[in-house]
Length: 227
Image (cartoon, rainbow, N blue to C red; front, side, top):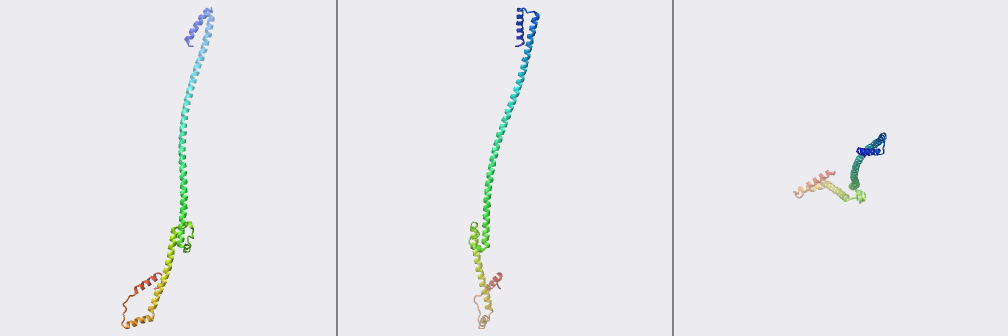
């Protein structure tokens, strides 16, 4: 109820009081009570309006805070999703790295085994080259460490031993031949034959072995024989 409506109500109230033959003092008292009631009601209405305005402000603040909280929550959810995607990607990278590391470790172990095998095969070749007694006992150093190369080394060693043996025999025979020729050349009977041949006017014009004998002496000297 606004002021105009209240004054109109008061007018009608005054008319009613006149009809009821109220005295001026009674009318004034009644008017004062009505005005006091109106003022109290108006004050209460203003208080309610102020409270409503305050509530509207609080509601607006609450709505703003709610919207801000919702926006912050959305941002947090987006960041959480992004972090989850990043974590998933990093997890994939870690899994891939672990797989590569395991593969590299397996390859490294295989290479170590291959290196050890090749090392022992080289040792087997060395044993075959330096220990003829073992090389004659085929693959005595170890079956898994044997190789075609070691077998080739054994054959070379066998041929070398055979050649060394034949060479020793040949050197012995050559040394014996040279020694025998020296003995024959220095013997009196040999010299006598040539002296008799010269007395009768003979002259030998056939093949000679002077160069070959010199070469034989030089070879024997080189290998430790006699000159």
